[in-house]
Each structure stands twice: as C-alpha cells, then as structure tokens.
Image (cartoon, rainbow, N blue to C red; front, side, top):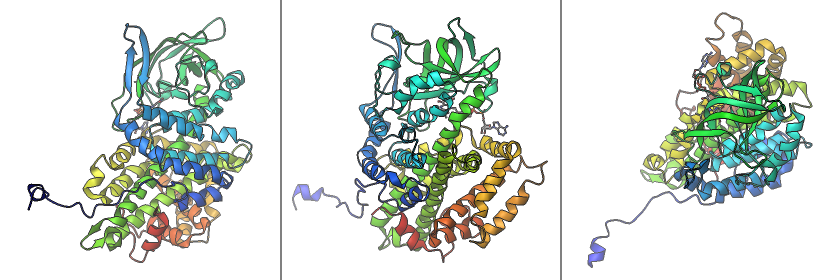
Amino acid sequence: MSVAERFLTHTVDNQATPLGDYNAYLTDSALREAVAREGGGWAEAHLTEFGAVAGGELMRLGYTANENKPKLRSFDRYGHRIDEIEFHPSYHRVMELGMRYGVHAFAWRNADTPGAHVARAAISYLHSQAEAGTGCPLTMTHSAMPALAHQPEVAKFWAPLIHSYDYDPRVLPAGQKKGCTLGMGMTEKQGGSDVRANTTKAYAQPDGSYEIVGHKWFFSAPMCDAWLVLAYTDKGITCFLMPKVLADGTRNAIRIQRLKDKLGDWSNASSEVEFQGAWAVRVGDEGRGVATILEMVALTRLDCMIGSSALMRQAAVQALHHAATRKAFGKRLVEQPLMQNVLADLALESEAHTALTLRVARAVDASARNEGEAAFARIATAIGKYWVCKRAPAFVNEAQECLGGAGYVEETSLPRLYRQAPLNSIWEGSGNIQCLDVLRALNKEPETREAFFGELLAARGAHADLDREIHWLTQAFEDRATVETRSRMIVERMALALQASVLLRAGNAAVSDAFCASRLGGAHGFNFGTLPADAPLAALIARASVG
Ligand SMILES: Cc1cc2nc3c(=O)[nH]c(=O)nc-3n(C[C@H](O)[C@H](O)[C@H](O)COP(=O)(O)OP(=O)(O)OC[C@H]3O[C@@H](n4cnc5c(N)ncnc54)[C@H](O)[C@@H]3O)c2cc1C
C-alpha cells in the first residue's frame, strides 16, 4: 500500500446531494395554487421567470451578501463626514435583481389590474427565501406609496422614482437618479410601540419646509434616498419626508451614529441616527402623523407575514431535500415513519401560512374597490402578523434539526434562516401590539368583526372542527374585563380558524382535513411531528417537495 493510500482515511459517503439551482415558483404547488386562487395568476410568466432567479443566482448571492456585513464609513480619507454604508457587491446585485423583478414596485406599476398585490406578494415571497435582509428597504419602498399619497405634490415627485425597476445606489439628489428606495423612522430610545413618546421636533421654515431635530434609535436602511419620519410640531406628531441628499447636492443633516450589531438580518444595515436640523417636507396633516404612517405600516405588516411564510417555506424545502437523500439505519430519512411525521407537519404548517398570507394580499389588493375586503385586510393583517411571524423561529429550528448537525453549520442556509426568524414578529409592531390592534379594530371598526366572521362562515359546514371553533370565537369576546389578558389566545385561535377556512375552500382535502384535525381538533402536540398516525403524511411530503 502506498503512503498516499495509507493516509486515505475514508471515502465521503451518504452525504445529502446538493439541491442546486431550482425554480422556486414552479416547484411550489401551495404558492402557485394560492396565487391563482387569489387572483394573481395573470403574472404566472413573470413569477416563473423570477422563480428561476430566486432559486438560482439570488439564492447563491444570499450567502455572500450575509457573510460580508455592511460597514459604516463615517468619514472619507480626508476627514469629511460622509455617513455612508459600504456593502458587498453581492448585496448590490441582490437589490438590482429584486428591483428588476419589482419586489418594491410591481403592485403599483400594475395597479389597474386586480390581483397586482397578490402577484407582488409572491414576488416578495420568492425574493425573501433567497435573501431576507434586502427585503427591508424593498418592502419599505413598496409600502411608502399610500402614505405619500397624503401629500400629492410630494407623491408626484417621488412616485416615478419609486416605480422605476432600476436600482441606483449612487449618492445623488433624488431628481438625478434612475430609481430610489425609501425607509422609515419612527422608533426612538424612549418608545417604539408607543410612538407618542417621541421627542424629535420639527421646526417650520418660512418656505413651508421643516427642520427636524432629534434622533431615531432604530433606522433600518440608512442608505435609502429618503425616509418617512415622525416628529412633533406644535399641533402634534406629524409625518415628514426627509431626503438623504438635498436638491443642491449637499447631504442632509442626518448623522449615522452607529450600525446595530444584530442577531441576524446581517446583509441589512440597521442604524441609529441623529437629525441635526435635517431638511424635510410634511406628508399629511399636522398632528395626523401616526394615522399617515400607519398606511405604510399596514403594508409592511403584510410583508412581515410574507417574509415569515417565505422563511418557513425555504426551511421546509431544505429539510425535505436533505431527508430525501440522506440515509440512517438503512433507510432514507424521509422513509422513517417519525421523520415523515415531522416533514409532513412542517409542510402542512408552511402551506397554511402561505395560503393565509396570499388571502390577505388579495384583501389588500381589493381594498380600494370593496369595503368588506378593506375591513378584512384591516383585521386579518394584524391577526396574521401575530401568528405567522410568531411561528417562524420554532419552525425553522425544527427544519434545522432535520439536517442534524449540518443544519447548525453556516454552509447550509439554516443558521441564517434561524437568525432571521424572530425579526418579523418584533418589528412593525411586536406580538402583543398586534393582539391589542385586533381588539382595537373590533371595538372601533365593527365592520372588521363582520368581515372576520364572514370569512369563517364562508367555510361553515365544511368541517366539524371549524364549526366548533367558530362557535367558540363568537363567545370569546364576551367577558370584556379579561379580554385583553386573553387576547393572545383569542388571536391565535382566530388565525388558525382563518387558515382552516382558506384551506377548506382551496379544495385539497388531504391538506385541509389534516390541518383541521391537528390545529383545531386537538390531535396535535406542542412540537412539530405530532400529527395523528392516520394523517396523509406521504401526500403532504410529496406536495411540498421540490424534486
Ligand atoms: C433589526 C431592526 C430594525 C428596525 N428598523 C426600524 C426602522 O427602520 N424604523 C423604525 O421606526 N423602527 C425600526 N425598528 C424598531 C422596531 O419597530 C421596534 O423595536 C418595535 O416596534 C418595538 O419597539 P421597542 O423596541 O421600543 O419596544 P417596546 O415598545 O418597549 O416594547 C417592548 C415589548 O413590550 C410589548 N408592549 C408594548 N406595549 C405593550 C402593551 N400596552 N401591552 C402589552 N405589551 C406591550 C411589546 O409588544 C414588546 O414585546 C427595528 C427593529 C429591529 C430589531
């Protein structure tokens, strides 16, 4: 035996095969059916094209964009203050592809076609599976439009720049750019959920503009071209648009203090900023800032649902693929009965989140045309933001475990998905705030109650467990003295009932019966992998698998 042969300790065997490039749209039956069901099927060709990008180049870029975190450059080499963020080329390419396919603008460019928000939700869902951090500026750019509409002359200038499919990272006055991105600044040190605790002040100038003095404690996407920010005038909290570069080419007086050192979301540069007399224009009426910016937040909350559904789908894809090719104890993991239960349960949960998210996207889409859908969007966004986002960390961890030790190693995407998973439930209104928002909607806008129960009643009689749940929910609000304390339990059950209603009407009995029995009928434990033995495990796995 040669020396070289003696030092060959082993042959590499029984490793899962690489998933490789795949079409993230065409291989996702639950997504495709939901897009068609909710009225976005006309965008099938666009989604198919982007599905290949998302499951290919974008997926690969996601690794490098996150391995190389953005850096704050406060000064140039000569000591001039520049407040710029330096990103890895992969980040720029992800942004370029995201904008080319319209994550930030597809819904507005196709606003005359019903279903545009559904198709755009699917675009965002595909994008987020490959790279979630860039979802932050893209989602804020998309969501800013309804708030900007409160100030027509401001909207007139910014809309074409937002609607552009060109990514232009140059630091220039907005009017000289091919396309722009927008962010938002609400959260201050003394209060995030309670934005009325803000201390930032706006001083009116003779020409009608304002000077903003104060700070923001969380200011994601400081490389954007402009931000919607809240600040106090004498008349109360007010919304402003603050550009990064002024029309004469000088930088606005916005100082980036530092970047946040975050658990995850590494490709995205979240910062702390101070406004040292920053120039801004008012958006909406003075004193109506919260109501104005909530129009943006309504859309970013839907995007939190989209982002968390996407993370869960991608984690499931990775788990299903691994289990299909890795063997233990003489059989592929996917053939082991207990692993089948885990995988099928993940697939089922993932489909329920995707189905509800796309249903809410349809309601948002139809809001301007249909009051009932507007009311449904109002309440279902808060319900879904609470439930879908809350489920992501445990879900991704379970998917991670399907890969064994490999799932804890950065070479797989699971650690990145896991770090990202808690974020959507925290920002844009944390879990409790969503539950309180559901109660607020039910109290102040009675049409939301009608819309919610109307959605459930559309599936009445289709499954005994849903019928029982509807009955429970009709009585859940009666004890008004304790309703706030109980609101997490109520909103959780509202979300599960909504998911059941959507799945039952979607018409795949294997999915809807397993969902109702396990999530509403009590035939399920606290962990994933606790479906009853007679659940259609193989069918659920086959439906969710990519190859
Ligand atoms: C990575 C990252 C990026 C961010 N980017 C931005 C950004 O770009 N712009 C921006 O404006 N903000 C941003 N945020 C801030 C985010 O929106 C806030 O952190 C969030 O809204 C919570 O506010 P807070 O941190 O002040 O927590 P708090 O308001 O102090 O809340 C703490 C906890 O108390 C709960 N709580 C609050 N009130 C009640 C109540 N009445 N009853 C029961 N429970 C309650 C909340 O649900 C939460 O769980 C970002 C946050 C993160 C993590």
